[in-house]
Image (cartoon, rainbow over all chains, first blue to last red; front, side, top):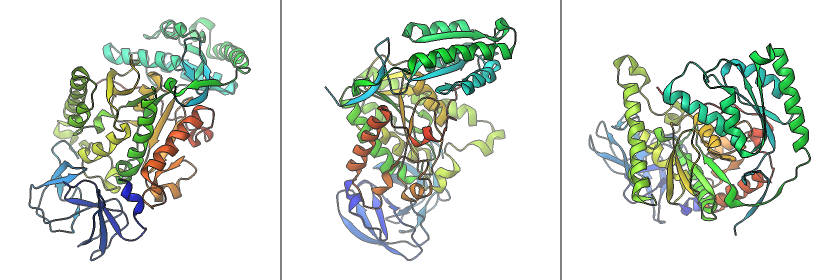
Length: 101
Length: 389
């Protein structure tokens, strides 16, 4: 987590655990924006989002099938209602959680 | 020996971080009299509530234990109990619950005095006398092992779980490592973390208790949302949580539990009770901010640490609430309400460790007398006793 402090104010997103399949936008991202994704552990790479991702929201790091688990903090936070593409916004419109929303 | 702060030593060995007089009604019917007494004497706080009568069983017992616990909180040097006279939770029981602490306690009962005006008069005289008696007391050095903090987050967004809660976890771990206590609650927002928390239990009993209380809370939520007539009221997290990027209760929970750092849980205790052990504790209660901090203050917490991503100004009467946000935008907007900007981690100005230390130092400063922003502005809306269905 300390790597967070290395981030600049540029277009960035964060991956909290190696098991995760989502990144969290640390700035507002617009469709087509390419941002720097920082993994917990220091690895960095580029990713392009395919729709608007508000600050603090999540996008997919890979294509996800319907019912695929969504991982954040290395834990399952829910499953996809529908299939989505890499770079898509993941939120209550396309994700569900059996424990509650 | 650990770090020190300057507090007020009580007769029973506990240490207050404030030296206030509490005016506590035993029933809602005497709430206005309690408020008027408090308004007459600076340095007092009152605890208006809507309960104390027409309740039965566990519900009334929780009310009773919580009101007694508030009176026993070491931040209060004296207590004026204000009763009506015919209520189920009698003012005598409240008085006798608080008196063993050795602090000053007086009781005024409206039906005994004759009317509310007379009760206000008598209560004001008690409060005046207590306030003058404590006015000459001075803070003395105390060890941080005497501190108990409550952990509660409200108006969470993604930054709460990302930076504000982990930073508070660092501060909590530092306090616990030196013998102090820290209380996690909000069971309705721990769903999906029970396997992680249970692994951090000090023994099998505590692990079983953690699993049990979270399972029971989830069952209670299921009961409350089962009927189709409540279709619109099924959400376990709030609209602001969604706006802030949280999509499920489990996602919120995984971020919420980070307030408790990495320490081992030493005890799970019931709402209204006082823990028997020192260290990291789990209080069995729901996620309503006021119900959480009320249970924590009744357990003896002298300070509450409150991360808020969306931003909330609320405070607690007589128990300082330290506000922390992980959202740099919220800090800019709500600087007048928020004490610590953990959003500095997001903007790259500070490390998580640095903000954790900043929170810890703020806890020591507030324990030694620095007023939190919620205190300065008079925010006291969090007092709210939980109810059983």
